[in-house]
Length: 311
Length: 276
Image: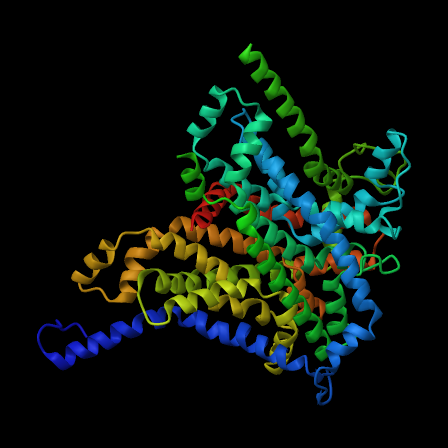
């Protein structure tokens, strides 16, 4: 093994082959894991969409019946799609705007700003179970802090989690709590903008609002694109908080699509049907991502373009 | 004039910061205060901010009311083993992608990145069947074993770091007669300390907090992890607010410590990943 690989040609060949093999050995854990835990299941789940697949007993082939049933016979499917869209429309813009505002605030060179950065990020490091428990207690209709605070302002608060029209708002409020990661991503983008650009603007007498809309915002549009995609996908997949806070209720007003898939699989044990539900979601996610990407030339500015414009 | 304007701006910023932090901090404070209250104080209206005495004993009572020690033990097993697995496998794979040129590298890396887009709902059903076939359901294995095959996000983060190291390091090691594995192990692994701390902390936080994985793959109480045990406890005893708050407080301490310890690494790691 330790011999020097100098002149002897067959040995040299051998060493070369070993060299060629080395990178594959290094990535082999991922290849094996990919086959066993991603590609295999992905393929199986695609096959399952065409079967009536109970948890016990033999699966039977049904073709595209699962999809037809889903679109034409299952009321809950469309209701869950509707609820999820409603959630997305409320959640995604607020998520982006609040995360961006916080990121702007914590990138100011103020004393003690690190403390605020930590406070804003703190909810992102705790379990969804803890989030649900803390907010469940805040939302409590009789002893909850929120309704007490509202009563001090002369507002009689709703019965948050047991009111069909307010439960989804409560889920939005609790979900927004964990926007720390998105805030940090914006923060690092803002921090990477060269300082001299701002100095020019200040000399030119631009107001803070003007500076934000004509310098900061255009320069962070690539990050905005990334956050828009992750936030939208995250909202479509929301499951933990509805499981823990409302269990889909009251009167299925928070029966999100993620919960619908989960219940079809692990409560009603319609595995093939649930696989079809999940693939529908997957395809929508792919299409939405594609749509956001395709629209990006209209509003995303990459650095080289901006500098070209300036010249 | 200018400084007055700036000072006004700063005051405004502080005001906004303080108001906004209420939203993020009040649920934590309220949870801790409730955990220390008596039953009557917790359910008082109007709510009492502070308890008459801080009942530290509430934490002990809550801890003993359920087999939380077993849940804790399971959580620790899963967290420690997955972190160990991720450190080994993700760093090996990242090294393979970052420091070699080989046939199919780009396509493999594209596949790796795109696996991050696959929703959990799509793979969880076949995974459940797969683990059932292996007789792994209701064991900790489904939560542990996949970590030994790396995770796309961690591989990506480590690769970004490794790409930035000059080629000279391998050349020097090869001249000294080290093989590829030795080069990885003796030269590169020590250099990867910072990103390895980052992925350890990210993994500890993710696995310690995980609720859906244990929910699907575990079904008997002696296998529960802390989040699952706490959620089950809450489900059974909705009205026992004090012990629920006490256990929640205990459960969130480790990730908060991990974060405090690695805050710098997390922010720097994030900016490193974004640049790529």
